[in-house]
Amino acid sequence: MRLIGTIAPDRPLLVIAVEEEAAHLGGELPVLLTGIGKVNASVALATVLARGERPSEIVNLGTAGALRPGLEGTHLVSRVVQHDLDTPVLHSLTGRTYGADLTLDGADGGPVLATGDLFVSDAGARDRLAARADLVDMEGYAVATAARRAGVPVRLVKHVSDEAGAGADRTWRESVDGCAQLLAAWVRDHLGRGRH
Image 1 (cartoon, one colour):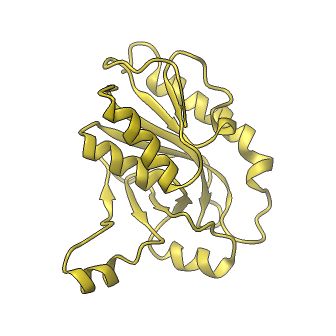
Image 2 (cartoon, rainbow, N blue to C red):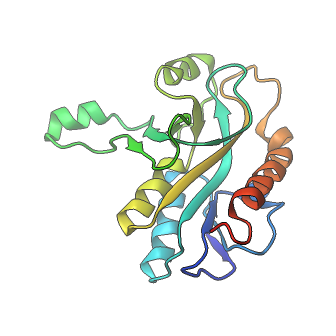
């Protein structure tokens, strides 16, 4: 976990997993680098928010794998699900719901993001996930949950880096710098001076 910049109530906090995804951001907004995965993302954000530092909103920027061929570009996520938590089984055992899908404000019609610590590397797993989601990442659900529990508005902005599963034309490592440039452009267009 590393916080770059100062959190203030009049500007958003950018929450990003790794430095490669933040490579082209200017220093205008604070950036929290969490590390990869749900545990790292939730602990890093909860730690910062527990200090009493409150941004105007949290914007989780990052790359995502496409679960369908031809899906590309930068997307504002409308709903996020956990793909590696068996919510129905837990409900049947406990009578309570853990890990329910989260609908995000202000992104009507946007894609559904599946978050999990399991890296989607085969076509079978990709096809099963594609039945309920459009994109896959490893931090979005955790960031959305931590932000909501702290009462801070949250948006998830994901740029498609590659197709999830084996046989993708490009790997994450080959595409991350281009993705980082486009995510930085999204920040300039949507969070620039006078827009937050």
